[in-house]
Image 1 (cartoon, helix red, strand yellow):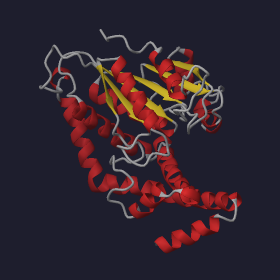
Image 2 (cartoon, one colour):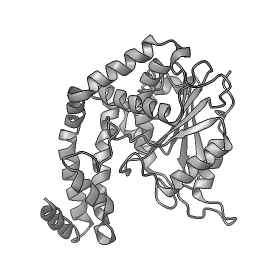
Image 3 (cartoon, one colour):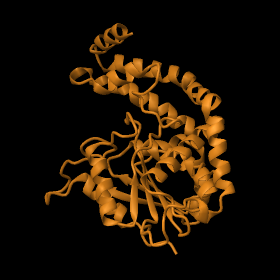
Length: 334
């Protein structure tokens, strides 16, 4: 297996056209096989796990969700971060993403950050975990020098999980799995409040925004709380999650052309599909677009990049943090 991978990478040195051809072939192959992993997970363990979780949440009164938090608890806000398609695991955020979440929680002391949900696995399992292709993903993740082109394999693989989340056939299974992981990690970070209102702020970047929106209906059903979605350069379909989100904010950089893909590819985003959940949210004022600054989609000058963006030393992640802090989502829920 590794010898084959090595020969392919040697071949790729011949030029960018070869890389594009390989990427196209892999995209088609994974598009055919991508749903299989979700279905297998559902058959083996997903159905039983999700049925238990949903029934447990339905049967317990709201004030009985957790018995370990006192009424004096100050935590009433969960910030759930879902990274983009270049992510490798649930516990490996970029330095800029870590800085963003650390400073956000420091500013809003009533909030805790949930930063270990992997939005490209219904089982919340990293690519280096118990997978048949784990050696391939680890190789692609750790490659450097001219071999770092192998990183495209991870992006293609995760891109298809993003597509599954948006798919009407497989999306319900996949998105329930992500919602279950979110609830589990929320409880692990801080027990869900028993008698006081709380809110969930889902922050998704790139494909993570679509997965966040896909999880909204199940989080709303199980936890019965207000949910806000913040898309940071996100690419999303425009149907799932829009009817049940309290507000959706979309931050877009002036140099980010990738986030435009969503409104071109997905029919619910088209202005003439007036009955779509996306367009309903636009008419009701629940969907807001804001320019975040001169951001690119990713990298040192992306939304969580630590390169200097302005002469006064302000970095790109500083600009993103400023925009998020200015959103009207941080007041205490009554």
